[in-house]
Length: 637
Ligand code: COA
Ligand code: AMP
Image (cartoon, rainbow, N blue to C red; front, side, top):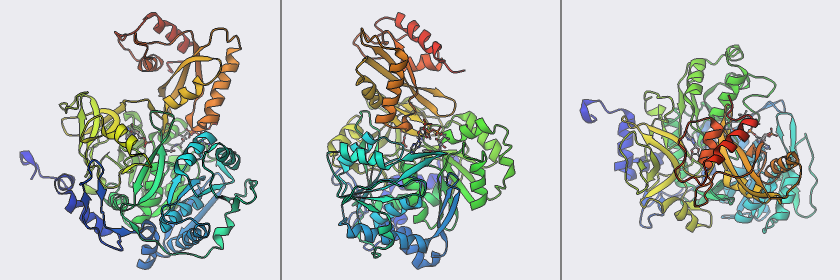
């Protein structure tokens, strides 16, 4: 029984056990994973703040996601359904079929000299070959680094330089609704920019567009189809599975490093306990494999737990059918969908009364999970009323790889409070701290931090950069991992994650650094200084807007400069930055010590009331900013 005579829920028991007896708790969860050799100890904290989960254990992630299921009789079950409205294709791959493709791709990589510990960069669209490539790397103990297709060449170059891949796997093109995005020219120019040159690029030629090849370096994906299949290489639980780069507070991306053992144990546990999904069921994460949600819940978790995963190449809206999501759920018998709130805001805008929704039979659909940004209560209520199933907002980060705060449906649903991501997931001790690192009382806002050690599955460090790992995440509050999020915990222990404490913004569920955009804008010859702030947007949640002060005597047409700035962010960071608004101002609001008041710009653009910061150099500048923002349509009504 919990305190006060209230019966402890399964969640309470699991949570308490995970914190008080982490060795027993995660050791038990690890029994659901196949090990070639059992671990020596569950958690090694001798090198704290660097922790190791399951040291001594030997396994293979690919074996657990494919071979094991085929051996256990799931060979003919669909492992992956590729649903691509943009190419009018639906294809099903059984576990046996996927295993064959992965083993051959792994064989082909081996023939190219890729082996244990080598890096492979994967710059590909949402096609089954991308999943095959990831699992093939895992099969031979190579470390993959998937780069999202919406990034520009410079971002890809930064990742190639840092990861130093032996081979890059890519495709001729991606398809954005009805536009063809040529990947190969971006790849070629990224390699030209990068300090590191991969030995080979293997290109998947899509029928929509053929890519030209570089003699001696580039090879056709066909080589994988004819390669000799290879079996799994046993790796240490603590060996890296992948590097995934994410936006930091500077323009330089951080290489989040994920291990094999802890990752597999945590993800496998989460499928049953958070998502309430059983082997054989269909799970759909409508994200992109280039993001962490795609890594964890399109690829590794559903396959590790013997489910069928849906790989969807399209958008929530804008595809030929405005009921696209409902069609996929009905057609493939999806039990749970995981996507970003922005996808639902887009659907709500296009089909507010649910007319398209009603055309489909969703009787088998049980739960909607949302993450990537806080789900605004209006959208959560709208989705709940429409779907008549629980809508669960849950909070996580690229760094953690799985949820920190959630309503763990498999442990028994807790009451939903719109706007909150419910309670900490077993394994996570979440505290809200003041600027001195002291815990604040309930209902008081502060910095959200996770007490060390982080549970299995979370980042172990940054690739080749222990220094930045400790500086970025561990030094602010000793003994804690610093999330960079601000929020509070209410009287019932529910978590309310409200905003970031740094310059990261969330645009359509994508994590972007405003600092990186400022770097690009500041490099324009006519720009004296600039500020980028994330402002509210009815569909994307937040969009970046740039305020720019031009150099005296720039003398050029401001429309032209604006267009150049928008284009240069698109060319340097990528279209995914959604940077489309630039306002020219005479000066920026600053403190007396010269710091730009970005938060104040955001409040003006959002139409929020605020008190003029006491440290402001000249309050009159705020009227100028307000007038300029109003002239370009902010605040948006
Ligand atoms: N390759 C190349 N370009 C890409 C891309 C890719 N893989 N992905 C997106 N882009 C481009 C888009 O075409 C768009 O370009 P544009 O400015 O020329 O129109 C730009 O990047 C911004 O893309 P996005 O933010 O996705 O906006 P959108 O208007 O195309 O679509 C949504 C908006 C809400 C419909 C869409 O983002 C969506 O369905 N999101 C929900 C799922 C999700 O991605 N979640 C992520 C984390 S869980
Ligand atoms: P990413 O690394 O792209 O997954 O982005 C992680 C960041 O997105 C977090 O640090 C939060 O700021 C935000 N985020 C993700 N999910 C949620 C959520 N459910 N509620 C509030 N913020 C969220």
